[in-house]
Image (cartoon, rainbow, N blue to C red):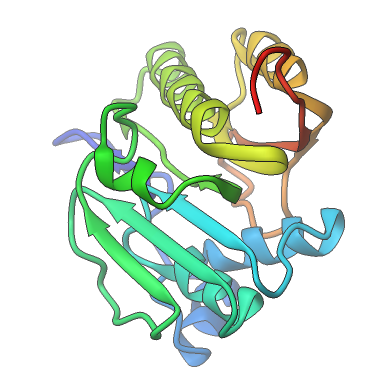
Amino acid sequence: MARARTSRGIKNPYKGGDAFTAKARSEGYPARSVYKLEEIDRRVHLLKPGMRVIDLGAAPGSWSLYVTQKVGASGRLFAVDLEPLAIPLPENAIAIVGDALSLENDELAAHAPYDVVLSDMAPRTTGNRIGDQTRSFELYMRALAVAEKLLKPGGAFVGKIFMGEDLPEAKAATRRLFTEERGIRPEGTRANSYEMFIVGLGKKIVPGTT
């Protein structure tokens, strides 16, 4: 679910390889998206050894594989997707087949709280830019709701969103939940893509909760 898909008959703007695609293949990653997370991690110091991280919509698995390397043997990665991952993950990872955005998913809650919640999810694109942006915003807000429920205080969130008229609302919602909000468009983003990532750092402590 992590990669954008298209309806039948609509040209896929993400189809076709480039230097990042070739690099991912040579380094054993199933998708070039890993370098977007790598840049975000480098810029905000997101991942550290020993962390518990959940990757929402993890297939095909590039982000998950990168995270397992960063959190190390003392950390744990939980990769959730409706479909099995395309690659095997090391022993410090658990792959969960199921709805990554369900707040009633007991398996997600069983491993909480998390230090980091990641979402590289994108909707099935249709070629209607406004409609695609709206669906992307809805996915982003659902992923943010998972972060609100399952992140520990001080935790971090990274979510993909298509830039559009809903972007200010998504950023404002993130600021309400985190002490710092940043918008990042990594170098690995294709020139014809209108995606970006919103990063929330330092989850706030809600009064009346522990």
